[in-house]
Amino acid sequence: MSALEGKKVLVGVTGGIAAYKAPELVRRLRDAGSQVRVVMTAGAEAFITPLTLQAVSGHRVRQHLLDPEAEAGMGHIELARWADEILVAPATAHAIARFAAGLADDLLGTLLLATEARVWLAPAMNRVMWAAPSVRDNCALLESRGVRILGPGSGSQACGEQGQGRMLEPEELVAALAGGGPLAGRRFVVTAGPTHEPLDPVRFIGNRSSGRMGFALAAALAEAGAEVDLVAGPVHLSTPPGVRRHDVQTALAMREAVMGRIGGADGFVGVAAVADYRPAKAAGDKIKKSEASMAVELVPNPDILAEVAALDDRPGLVVGFAAETRDLENAARGKLRAKKLDLIAANRVGDGLGFDAEDNALEVFGADAHWTLSPKPKTALARELVAIISEGLLDEGKPSR
Ligand code: CTP
Picture (cartoon, helix red, strand yellow):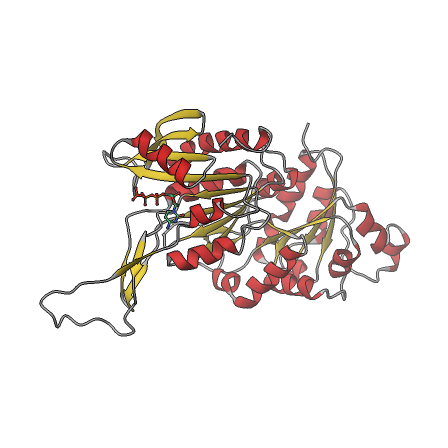
């Protein structure tokens, strides 16, 4: 039976081009067994007709706050109480700003204030708008109040650009509402990619990590129902659906982003290839080739993984990665103990595996456990690792250390 069976879902449609996906969303929610009512904002009507949504939902679509006929039936307060879940899809930048400000001058805004239901937003907008500081702040504020933000995904946009801002597909939204998954209700922080340590305004010390393993892991955790904060170094990858991404450049910025989000997290997975050292100082101006030779003084970076594992209120499960060229098991077990980890996933680098490769293979070690994950694409490997992680969390908290 679907987790949405019998659930009362109110779908709020606001005025973005992704409103054309709303009928499909309503149909899929009904297929999953939920009862659906639809509320449209004035802007939504520019993109889709109420009649279409009435046909697919099987109920009159509500558009106005002060509609005597509608209020004579299920008034707006009753409608707010009726809902188990409210999903605003698409949620435009304007709608998000209105909800953050608590404006109640239309039906949807009023319902969001008057409800105790869970509220979900599926943002859809141009990628630059999604990155705009006001939109970031409004989303952060809404999330801090318990609103769940689904996506947006990346890809080609209606405006012809490529980037993050696409509304998640109806089936992804339905899956998110249905929750389920072994990690539903759990939150993970994941690091991925390399770090770039600046030498001067145009040069840095970095490494060949593509970020693919970390992104695949974040995607697999989200697929398993977890809420995921992905702290990503400089990579060319799109954000997996349902994952909150925070881009950073340096190890210090990565540490700050992780520490700002680790409180209350159930798990931490350090997949990033964090630079162990950074230049003692980055030159303010571009370094000129005036000398016959030059030396760069390096100072150690903080070990983010070890710092997380040493926190008083550390997450229930702390997982590290290790890339080794030889003596894999000893090196990995050494790091497991030294950094006080619950699990470590080690891979041999070289021979088309590991760094910057499509495929990978992992040896996973816990204090008294060992799993061998044979070579396969990183996405498949990530799912296997998430199965081990879920077991670790469900098994009374954590594997023994
Ligand atoms: N890590 C981290 N912060 C650092 C360095 C590493 O969080 N400053 C994390 C990585 O994300 C990974 C694990 O620690 O999960 C890697 O361990 P580490 O001992 O640093 O690996 P290497 O750098 O490969 O170590 P070594 O060079 O000693 O083999």
